[in-house]
Length: 151
Image 1 (cartoon, rainbow, N blue to C red):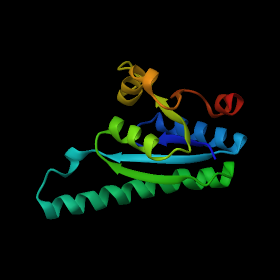
Image 2 (cartoon, rainbow, N blue to C red; image 1 turned 60 degrees about the vertical axis):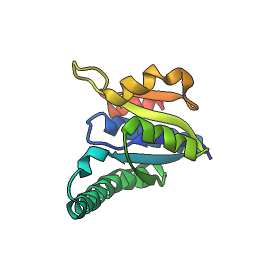
Image 3 (cartoon, helix red, strand yellow; image 1 turned 30 degrees about the vertical axis):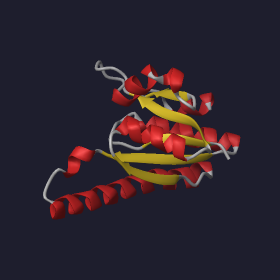
């Protein structure tokens, strides 16, 4: 089964990327894999404190994931998988694509502010010629209705 890999983070554009991935998976018989990356610098504390912070970060990610997963199951009939990795975002996304041969498309949300589309879109699109899968970049300001029409 072909999977759409989509990044779960705190960005506003993440929502449209999630919607797009779920709608495309539902219409093509594919799956959705949601990846969330915990940055390494978040745990540069004493060992015990770092472990507590790591566990709290995982719990926040799982709660956030469940919101999207419920919507995907209820509205699109898609049951997503969650992958949590620790490290640099681009490196971990690339590692996940290499580790899971069923991933067929990377879906990213593009920011709408004047700073540009966001660091992930910028970094990954620069190297897109060497990626093992295509990237779909979903504009962060598309309406739900437009997303439905496109998918």
